[in-house]
Amino acid sequence: MTRPYRRIVFFGMLLSLSACAAAQTAVPQTASSSSPWILTWSDEFNQPKGSPVDASKWMRESGGDGWGNEELEYYTARPENAHQQDGNLVIKVLQEKYTGADGVTRNYTSARLKTLGKFAQAYGRFEARIKIPRGQGIWPAFWMLGDNVKRVPWPDSGEIDIMENIGREPANVYGTIHGPGYSGKKSLGASFSLTPAQPFADDFHIYAVEWEPSAIRFYVDDRLYETRTPKDLPAGTKWVYNHPFFILLNVAVGGFWPGSPDASSVFPQEMLVDYVRVYRKAASAAAGLR
Image (cartoon, rainbow, N blue to C red; front, side):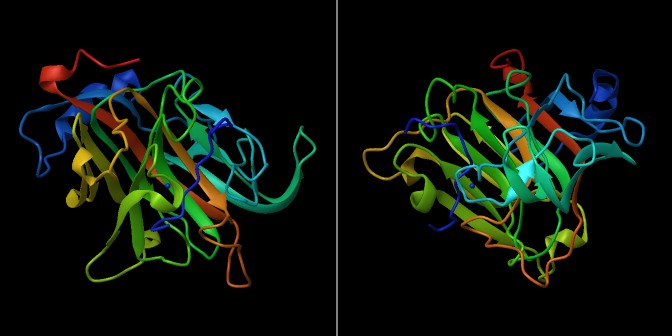
């Protein structure tokens, strides 16, 4: 499919260097931790209140063409939609009429950040501590795309959705992989719910994947809930998780999967990200970075 990469998901149907030393004292210990983890990249979002996102780590995307999902927001590069505050990244969804430089007008604005061209890694642990927003039509995500996506069109370049939530399902989050022959309605994923059931938007949670050459494991608060391997793929399809991927954070509004906001939806909404951290097993810490 020759098209700009867009997140298309119908589930069942997507440290600063000065802080690195401190972060390594909090290395995750999970069910699969058979060797030490080495921190390779992070953003702790500890800049002064109102600071923009770190341009050395993140690219801010803009546009309002629906992003392949019939989304209703316009992603902007404005600090109103993405900034640092009180030790968090704040992605803020506003209900406002906004017309971009491309002439597209939308009634909601938000932010979409990515590390393409700044950081990518193959294999390791990718995690973020996030408090998601809430409400019908709200669609937060922490995910990854293959860094060859400009040369190899999606889904052949691969996609790993570490965490997605749709507002009408406040107690569920989803982890999904997309690749050639198993994307969109054929994607492979699972959901996770807290016990006892409670909305994920009530508090921060740690969302993570641990990715090896032949396995991707999905965690919430270090609880393993899904493992994907080449054996899960449909016959005749290819496992494409063998090259570096970059990270994305965004909050969409509307779209095929979550549906549109309704009278119950409240704005503004905020996704708070305490940190994003990437680790590699010690034995392979020198390889696979870009």
